[in-house]
Image 1 (cartoon, rainbow, N blue to C red):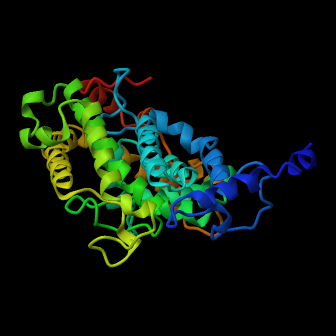
Image 2 (cartoon, one colour):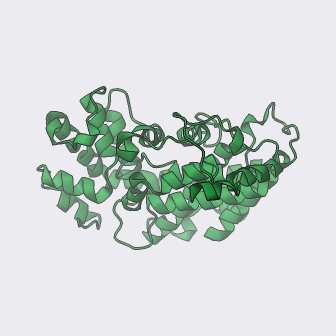
Image 3 (cartoon, rainbow, N blue to C red):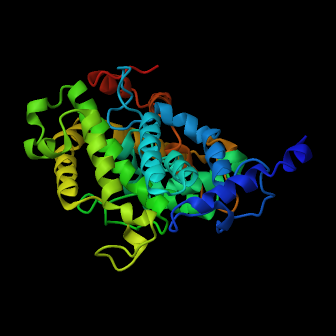
Length: 365
């Protein structure tokens, strides 16, 4: 049957259609390849194949029970790490399609960018970063998930372009567009900025839902430009990115830029408005949640100390002869969902965890 499909040259036809994309788009036939060579798929391009591998991974499924901002939320409509990932993918694909970039590459990066995120969101990340001598960053862990941990320890063997986009999606607080490492592909840059657009807007919605803030609390100048509803703000930002980055569709020299390396961006007014709304979230939402949920970091600390003292209790698939026990401990904890981490903490003797969680409306299941 495979040989019968091969005669249709399905993948090759798709690759030929990619030649109609922007001159700056990554063409799948010119990918820099995988960590290990594989026979090409007769139907899918290499980036389509990467997307499918990510969607079918265990780490992707666990995202549905991992925190975005609100830990193990009881309400049905709060954003989880999985719904955040899907929103990033939708926004990034819309931008990529409009700009003539490789939509399959964008989708694969978007779906894989947070696979290494810890339980309890950035609180869990901070706790592991404080505990580990070498530090911990969720983007680096996401790359480790796809390179090493998934597929029974064999990794997903993704393409270089997807792996780079996953690794370089993170931003800094002060410089959310220019801080950190900039992806070398325009598709990676699209995912990076789509990540910001998604979380700023859905975190505003969750903060309103949780009654941490009201509509009147939101910065008026940002709303005047971006819009007063979720759909208006996303539409404004997506249209602004497309307009500001339109030159890439024709392969022209970057306006006011020395090279196309940092090509995907916002107008000055849009960037200022988004930055204002983002900073509001840090001050009025993220810091408040961090203060209220400091106990979640203690859950991570307890788990870390327990498994460091009792490595024999780790699942055997995490123990790799060529690596230190600490690496296995970090991999195991980082992969936990919120509820699993809470139940595990209770199981190792952190008896207060149920009471502490209940104070924030979190029920252990």
